[in-house]
Image 1 (tube, one colour):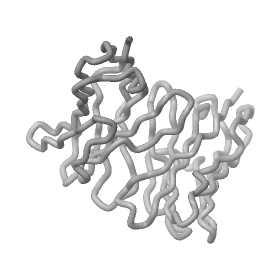
Image 2 (cartoon, helix red, strand yellow):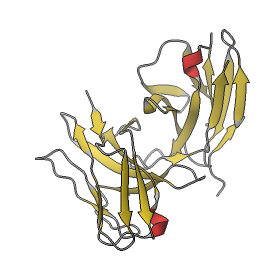
Image 3 (cartoon, helix red, strand yellow):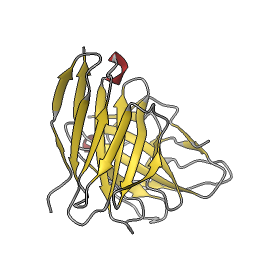
Length: 109
Length: 113
């Protein structure tokens, strides 16, 4: 069965500090992994996906199939990064997303 | 382009009633998915419709059903409401070839008393 685990419910860092939001997944096939973000009073929106291998708003995420992880990283956190972050997995070609429980990131001034 | 819209935004029902929620996808998007979000279970996939056909289904009881119309608009219905059905119901749409990027609506907050 597909499963996504985000071990940290809450994460608090200071502005300018590095941040890493952890995501581990369980899936026997070739997964497609995503990070979605929800800022206060805004809709859930895609931040990045592993197939794009791009950096969005300074965030990157690398798929590590050996460790079944897709951690989200940013070298220097900004206050505007404070939000709820969800890691999600989809079977190749499927629209069905399996979400982790989310990590609430707070970046303190 | 207008985003995904959901109506109504808020709904209060009592146990045993039924409810219908509506979702209008982004123009040109033909896939519509529904998710239930609760504090305890997080975001859980309900079902996905594409070209008026249910393509994927999550692990929810048969009280939860949906449909999609020829203009890609979708509705979901919950019959015989239970207290545990209180949740935020999110709709998301995507292009057929969109590589799974889903665009979410603001949600419908359902409260069952």
